[in-house]
Image (cartoon, helix red, strand yellow):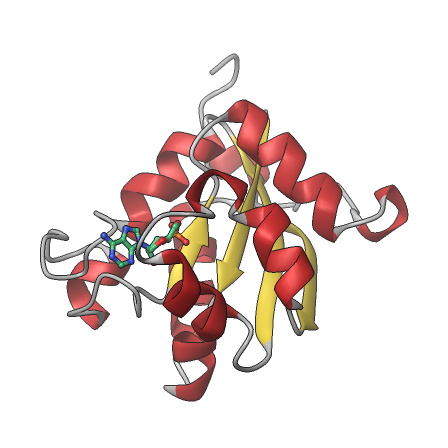
Length: 152
Ligand code: CMP
C-alpha cells in the first residue's frame, strides 16, 4: 500500500470540477484517507515546490497556487503514486492523453487542475507538510475485496 498527496488546485475549484475529479479517483479504486479545504500560503508554496523555486515559472506558479482555496487529499492504494500520476496525465494539459483528468479537462501547463506526488520521498514529505497524523484515517471500504485480487 502506498500513500500519495493530491491537490485539487484553485483552477479545479473555480471551474467546479472537484467533484468530478474526486469521482475519478474513487472510480479507479483508490481510497481517500484524508481530505481538507485549505489555502496555501506563499511560505508553504515555497516548501511544497522547493525544487521549482528559482525556475522561471515559479513566481506565477506561486501566485496561482496561493490564489484561492484548494482541496488537499491523501490517497491510498496499491502503487498509488504511479496510478495517480497516470490518472492525472502529463503535466501540460495539452500533452495529456484523452481519458486522463488533464487530458479531458485542461489545455494548460500551469492551470493543470491537480498535483500528485511524483515519488515515495516526495509523497512522504508533502503529506507531512499538509497533514498531521491525526488527520489521516486509513480504513478498509467494504467494497475492497472487489477492487483487487487476493494476494495482489
Ligand atoms: P505540479 O504537478 O503541481 O508540479 C509543479 C507544477 O509546476 C506543475 O504541476 C505545473 O503546474 C507547473 N509547471 C511545471 N513546468 C512548468 C512550465 N514549464 N511552465 C509553467 N508551469 C510549469
